[in-house]
Image 1 (tube, rainbow, N blue to C red):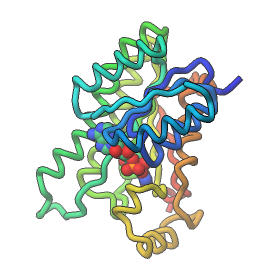
Image 2 (spheres, helix red, strand yellow):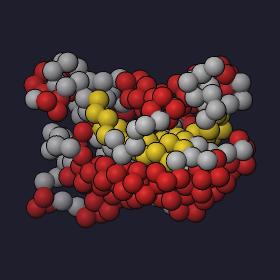
Image 3 (cartoon, helix red, strand yellow):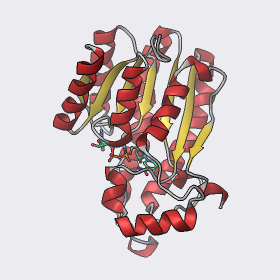
Image 4 (cartoon, helix red, strand yellow):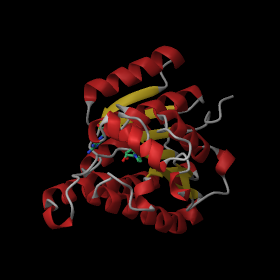
Length: 253
Ligand SMILES: NC(=O)c1ccc[n+]([C@@H]2O[C@H](COP(=O)([O-])OP(=O)(O)OC[C@H]3O[C@@H](n4cnc5c(N)ncnc54)[C@H](O)[C@@H]3O)[C@@H](O)[C@H]2O)c1
């Protein structure tokens, strides 16, 4: 029996990085996985790979988290296919401009807030009716260390959106507890994925790790995926509104 054997999970942003690794790990732990992303081809590769290893346990749905209709369609299709939905991993996210305040481009602010904050609100809004039908559920919002401190290189809009996600988590946890729906956030420090490779050059990564991270390195996607497994599973049944930091010790420096 896997740690997630009675779970049906939507994982957004599952075509790459932490989302793809989380989808793999969830399937290994016995979950059914509704993997979603705007990158269809990469997403299909992830799902094919999972199904080759574990049987037909996952489906790929093209889904833009900023689009409310796309959420309606995704939840409907996922619930019809697997019969229920009791986990949501709000993982999709984008990086932001590194401009400082006086030059900050408003279109970047609006775009980043729509994916990294509004997308999570829409996810909670549309998955809650299914979780109520299922008798409860677990929602995990992938926030960031940037929600807790001024993280070097994170970007202004990104930090604000991740901060909004942190507080959204608390309000949702409070309002949804009576339906046995738990809501927690994860706050990764620097994790080596495409998002970080694109925004933080290798020499800067080394300097950042040496200067700021007591464990002296960036994390791996698995480091976060394992936390999502725990928060999605009944092992964490008394946790809601919590924020789990995984940052190599960066926040204590
Ligand atoms: N990598 C890090 O260091 C780090 C640290 C803290 C938090 N995070 C957060 O973790 C999450 C995953 O990041 P990652 O590093 O794996 O990045 P990634 O770029 O590898 O993956 C993000 C995925 O989100 C998808 N996506 C983007 N916009 C979307 C949209 N509108 N609708 C649906 N999908 C969309 C992308 O296509 C991509 O597959 C993000 O929320 C990110 O902000 C990352």
